[in-house]
Amino acid sequence: MAALNRIQKIASHLDPPKPFKFKVALLGAAGGIGQPLSMLLKMSPYIAELSLYDVANTPGVAADVSHMSTAARVKGYLGPDQLPAALAGSNLVIIPAGVPRKPGMTRDDLFNINAGIVRTLAEAIAAHCPNAWVAIISNPVNSTVPIAAEVLQRAGVLNPARLFGVTTLDVVRAEAFLGEIVGADPRDVSVPVVGGHAGITILPLLSQARPPLPASVTAEQRKALMTRIQDAGTEVVQAKAGAGSATLSMAYAAARFADSCLRAMSGEGPVTEYAYVRSSAVQGLPYFSSPLRLGRSGVEEVLPLGPMDAMESENFEAMKAELLGSIKKGEEFVARGPAK
Ligand SMILES: NC(=O)C1=CN([C@@H]2O[C@H](COP(=O)(O)OP(=O)(O)OC[C@H]3O[C@@H](n4cnc5c(N)ncnc54)[C@H](O)[C@@H]3O)[C@@H](O)[C@H]2O)C=CC1
Ligand SMILES: O=C([O-])CC(=O)C(=O)O
Figure 1: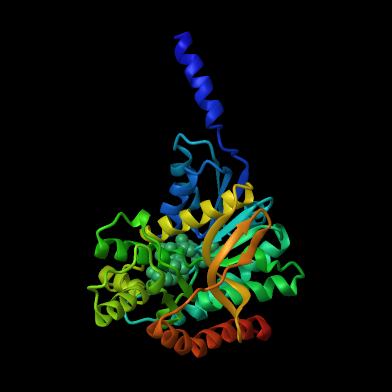
Figure 2: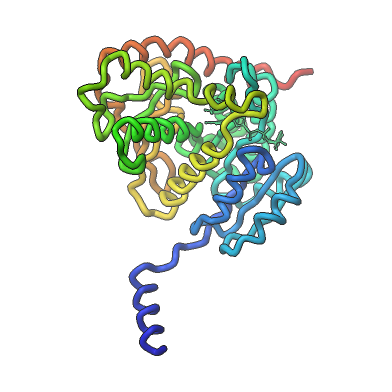
């Protein structure tokens, strides 16, 4: 027994427990993404307090998740009156609040409802946790991130190094699909995915994939893989046939993104992650998803996109007008002010 205790003591010294120190707020916690994401976040070794906010059903979700035997303390908050308390002291705020697509819709078709939701939530963040890192999942991401940025800027608290559009699901899908093709564990696969988060603005850089695509893959098959990654959200929307869009894979992707943020905040850097951020990576496009080096203070460096082959360069040029249009649409929405 004494020997076992000694071994346990040595082992815990070699692998010290993670600091359970951060408060993470999840806005939209009772939804299709919010519920499985609540569960995954409750398992994070970095989270001391998990704040679950929604306009419906949070007491049940919070009660359920709080019974998991992991360290994070869980609190549920319901409705706008409880939003300030949900946010106060948060280090990271994750936002999957808003409506999802149905078959036949584009992400931009969600703008009219989700733009107002993101604006309201960003106003509350500016007032109650202005230094938090903010990760936006709500679609259309290409516009909702500029909306949040404009709100935070008008409140005088914008830190572009801490505002992210979550595009991790595009990377996760690229890894899964390439893993299938090359017969590798997706965890050993890497594919940069840059640009934005809708249709052709999603640009997988297959020429930089590791392991590389086999030489036997034809240009046509390469193009088909690129298109599948770009349309993967629609693939799920159609398969769910009216019951929503990706929720489980999105929760997985968001948990992975949150883990990267919390590792970076903890100083366990350098952490490399992809996200849609305000940057000067591409001339004429104030927001772009790039590989990022994250550190304690947020984005410490926007990393280069790297070389593109002819097909990728063509797509890169083709996406620019659409991405800029979506950015401007978000910015103009905030400039117009609330509907009278
Ligand atoms: N960035 C990405 O890669 C992805 C983004 N999405 C987007 O995520 C969003 C959420 O999707 P789901 O969870 O499937 O939708 P859902 O409808 O299942 O859940 C949304 C939740 O947001 C809540 N909500 C609505 N208004 C709110 C407000 N003002 N404050 C707080 N909560 C509010 C609802 O009560 C609901 O619980 C959609 O806009 C969807 O398009 C979905 C998948 C991937
Ligand atoms: O496609 C949708 O509407 C949801 C989404 O963003 C995705 O799955 O990538």
